[in-house]
Amino acid sequence: MPLDTGAVADDLNLSWSSAQDAGVRAPTLGDGPNTGAALRAIREFYGLDLEALTQTTRVRRAYLQAIEDMRLDHLPSRPFTLGYVRAYAAALGLDADQAVARFRYDAPADDQTLRAPVGVAKERDPRLALIAVCGAVVGGGILLWNIAQHAVKMNAPPPAIVAESSVAQARPAAPPQGPVTLGAPLPAPPESTTPKPYVTPGLESAMSNANAVAASAAGDIGDDEATAAGLEQAAPLGSPFTPKGTVFGVTPAQAVVILQARKAASLTIHGADGSVYFARLLSAGQAYRAPMVKGLMIEVSEPDAFDVFVANQLRGSLPTTQVPITRLTQ
Image (cartoon, rainbow, N blue to C red; front, side):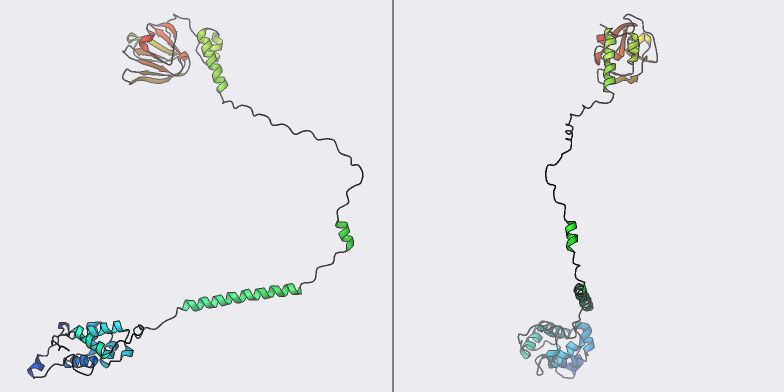
């Protein structure tokens, strides 16, 4: 085996210059009957105790002591033991591979199963015992309940014997013999009828008002009927404009066309570019003086609801819901 280099770990502050000065040879891994004895000799040569090595290697003192004594049965499985030997040698400044190689030679592997580190106790979960006890209690209770039910059934009195006369009375009466008189026949069930068609609420009155407006425009109804339909009384053509409510729009000098509502209806005046000049729901009697601007368009909800005045004279009602103002002056 190669000899130890004599290097020492700095963290243990080892120094053997005094021993060299005295002519004493430091022990090596090749000394002693086994690896544990060599490691102990080197440790004692440098005046170190196992507590210092425990702090450096982070290995339990008991394991380090077992390595020095070569008590393999006090050590964990072989991989852990080889790691402890490697850490022990490195802490002393020795060749860790050389220390592991000699330990393998001194303690060959016996191919046994891995053992847990010594000192690790196998503890049972106390909850398992509690669960087992609860299960036994529940099982015993179910068994006792079944036994009690069986005993109750065994001790129950036998069923009472029913007399033959009672059975005869319980039997249904025999059907009558001979002809049977039937009652009067029942009337036939009523036939299903088609449901009445659905009528929209207010549709009938709205239609009657629309018909009244059309008849008033054609001159088929009188003023009383037009008033009942919600229209102002129709004036004869050529009648002058008479304000009957608020007049919107421009001044009389700037207007040629006047629109006067005969009943409540909406009126919107659009410009040629789509802009809105006027938009309002006019009540009966209210009017609007339209400016003489090129391209203006009139849009109303009901054309028969507006009278058209041109130059303050009645020309009739609007022809359609949308009409240019210039058309009314022609």
